[in-house]
Amino acid sequence: VREAVVSTQSTGDGVKEFSRLGRYREDNTRPVKLRLSSCSLRDKLLASKSQLKQWNFCKGVYLSPDLTPEERDVRRRLVVEMKARREAEPGKVFFIRSGKVVERYSSE
Image (cartoon, rainbow, N blue to C red; front, side):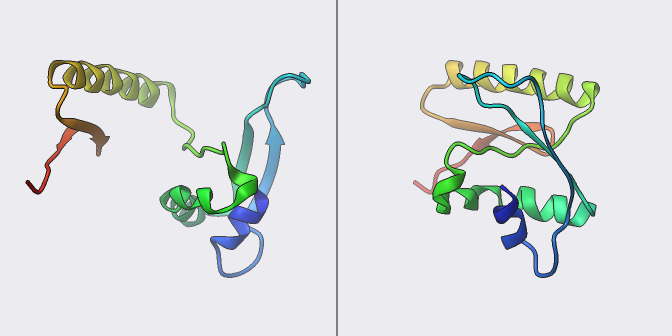
C-alpha cells in the first residue's frame, strides 16, 4: 500500500503513520489505517483509488475516508435508499454522489 501511496505523489513519502487495526488472526486480513501528511494528499489518493487495480499486490485493496458517526449514519441511509430505488427500477443504475442518490443516464 505504501508503494501505491508513493506512486501517487511527486515528492517524498507523505505517510505519517501506518498501522494495522484489530488483532492478528491467521485466517483473517486486517484493515490498515494510514495517517497522511496533508489533506491534499488524502484527496489525491482517494481520487486515484480506482487505479489500484493496475498493481498486482493491490488486488483486494479498498480505500475509504475516515467518517464521523454522523457521516456514517447519513451514508448508511443513502445506501438503503439507493438499494430500494435499484430494486424498484431494475433497469436503471443508481449511485451516491455529493450526498444524494443519483440516476446514471444512458446515452441511448
